[in-house]
Length: 367
Image (cartoon, rainbow, N blue to C red; front, side, top):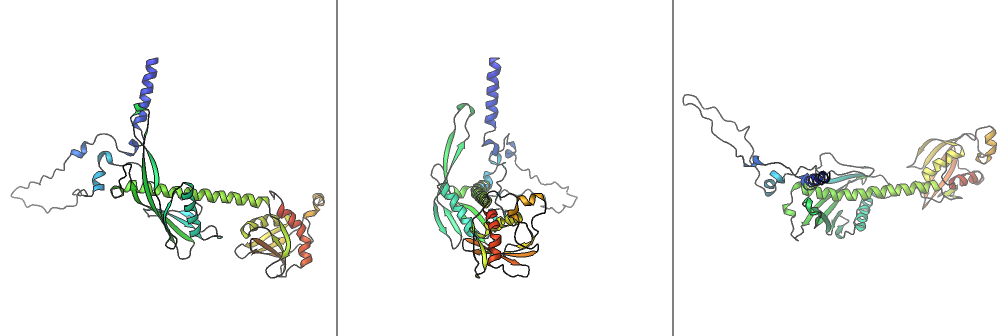
C-alpha cells in the first residue's frame, strides 16, 4: 500500500513537470525531420526523347536568412495561441484585419471628450501600478512609459520543489489616434525597449510572437482598468439617482418660473422620468439632446385606493403638456408648459411643486 502511494505521487509530479508553463508553449517529440535534406536528383531523360520544359511551381521555398526565422525551428517553435486584444469597455471594439495591439473606442459619455477620458484611464492605471511616465506629448497624443518590471517564473525540475524567478524590464509607447469628429479613437501599444535579467537590451532579437504577447498583455491591463472604472462610475451614478435629489422653486435661464433640481443634467434626466411616472404623467415622446418631453397627464385612477393617496393628485387637467429640461450650471431647471407651449405661471408651478419635490427626494423610488 505504501509503495503504491509513493508511485502515485511520483507519477503525478512527473505529469505536472511535463506540463510546466514553458513546455506548454513549445513543441515536443523528436525533431528528426530537421536532419533531412531535400533530394534534388535531376530527372533522367533517355537520349532519344526530348527533355520536357521544367516548371518551378512545386519547388520548396528557400528558408529566410533572418535570425528570427532560423530560430523558429524544432523545439523553438511556439505553439501557444496568439494574444487577443479584449475590447471589454462599452463602445470598444477591435478593427478587423488590424494585426497590431490596437483597440477602438467610441464616444459614450458626452460630458467629457473621448481623448481626455482615455488618457485619464491610462494615467490612472500607470499610477495605481507605480509605473512612471518617461514622456507624455499631449498635443501629439503619445505617451512612453518608464521601465515596467515583470517577474517570470522559470521552468524547474519537479524534484527541486522550488521555483526560480527572473526580472525583466520593458518600455511601452502608447499612441492615440482620434478621428476628426472626435467621437472615435484608437489606442495602440508597442514595446520600444526590453532588457533581460542580465541587463542586456534584447528588443532587436525579439520574435514576433513574444513581441505581440508583451504589447497585447499591457494593453489589456489598461482596458481592464478602463472597464472597471467605467462600471464603478456607472454603479455610483445609479446609486446616486436612486437616492434622489433635492429641489426648489426658482426660475430658468429666461426668468420663467421653474423647478431647480440639485443635480447635473445627465443624472436629473433619468430620475425625472421616474418622478413623472409616479406623479401620473405618461411620457409620449422625448429628446434628451434638446431637453424636451411631451407628456400626457392622466391623473390618479378613481376608486377606493385613490383616496388613501390623495397627495398624488395634481391640480391639472387631464391633458397634454410639455416639459423643458435645461442645464443650469451644476443644477438642472425644469419648466412646465401647456400643449400650446405656454409657460406655467408661478402659481401653477408652486401648486405641483410639493408632490414633485417629495418624489424627487424619495429614496429608492419604486414605480
